[in-house]
Length: 283
Ligand SMILES: C[S@@+](CC[C@H](N)C(=O)[O-])C[C@H]1O[C@@H](n2cnc3c(N)ncnc32)[C@H](O)[C@@H]1O
Image (cartoon, rainbow, N blue to C red):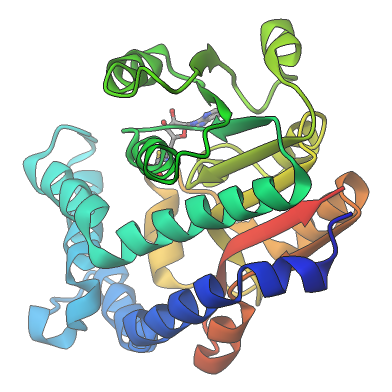
């Protein structure tokens, strides 16, 4: 049976590495907050005022506000596309993804998981890390990748061709709705569900729905622990990012799972940083 102590000891090295990186990466979050507040107040911000570790995110937010001012939002905007592409390759994003995947696989081993389900695959960055990790460890589990958009699943099907030895099924699933019957039939329990940056584009009550199929969850999202929102949260809302308040998530995690904990709480405490980025729950 999974317990918090067992999980923590199994993932202690991953937590140590991730928290150390987070503390370095996000130490300047207050200066980033100041710079984005100026942006929101329509004041000029020189890039020298922006902490280097936040420069890409800052440029992206600046572009979002510029587009909002024109009244036309364009996902194909070059700066936006470049910023997203750079961010996806950044050392932090990479480590965040690797930590979610390695933690999921270690919990899968502890609990004898039979099916892994990924939610909201996006450009497949997390899926690719999962495929590489399973391939290199030769501990291969059946993987189901889902998203609300069919175009996402088409690109995952292409990725799948590079790993013919891994059983990978793709299904459309909008996590605001109950899981489709075909997904329920495919899953074998225990089932571990993992994701990154997808619940923030859906809503908090999706957690209740995910709990219908998951015995274990590893959520990688921006969970607001303090309840306070900042200028960058307001800008992020403009491109569909919903603030996920831990105070609203906690009752759902308590209802759906036997226990849960915040993987990177130590970083949040050191930095007085508002967000937790990995949340683990189990039945
Ligand atoms: C930022 S991307 C995810 C990135 C990806 N997980 C990664 O780590 O590379 C967000 C994804 O969530 C999906 N999404 C948004 N709302 C959703 C919903 N209600 N149900 C399922 N997927 C959703 C979008 O289609 C998109 O692919």
